[in-house]
Amino acid sequence: MSSASRDIIFSGTGPGGQTQDGCSVELYRRARYACEIEHLRSMLPAGTTVLELGCGTGLLTHRLLDFGCEVTGVDNSAEMLKHVSDRVRKVHADIEQLALEERFDVVLLPSGLINHADAAVRRAFVAAAARHVAPDGVLILKCQNAQWLRTAVTGQLVKSDGMSIELVQVDRTPHTQEPQEPQEPQEPQVPQVRMTLKYTLGEDVWTHAFVVVPMDEPAIAQLLNEAGFAVPEALDAKREWFLAGLNARDRRDRRPCPPSPASPR
View (spheres, rainbow, N blue to C red):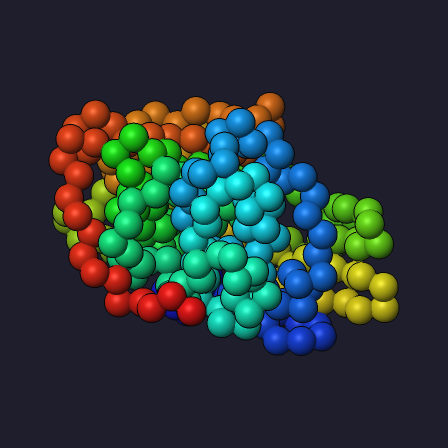
């Protein structure tokens, strides 16, 4: 996910290696696509240029290829990127520092990255999206359900296709807001949610511990607005997927991105 995550607790266990944010590469390699972006297909016609931020092993990426999209996938785990199709332009980099020369029709920020517990990292993710979206392009993001994060209790979450997912630990603690520079936007205190998930596939077991914050729609809209995006539009009944284009002023004031410090891998 991000080198800036070092102050937030992430950990993972199980067969194979784990990334900086505790995700298990082997688990993601063996996971099956579960129709996560089928409802977005009409917005992703063949030929659409897509920048996927945090592509992992390509679970969504490969479906984008099926749609006929031209995909650039970004991840800071070289091990994850090894499992992404060579039909994808692969960029090994942190999202926060990404500065490619291209602009994209769609920038995709999936996996609840918007719920990162560090406000500075959340802003950096959205700023990276704003740097790379075309003037008439859009950001599509997924957030974690805020109500579920506030109320979830331990127990079985999913059991399908041979995989089970169990919430084995959850703890909610007040968020201690760090002092911010005067020019930085002041944010209300948000409780942190610390979770540990257990994944079982056959005889193999993985765990992933992480920290997130619930993000209600007004908070998402404010975060996007600060980066130059217009009011987001919900794309699904659960209101977990959102689309936002640049606001009119930022479409006019597009500046070229600086050259990328990251080479495609």
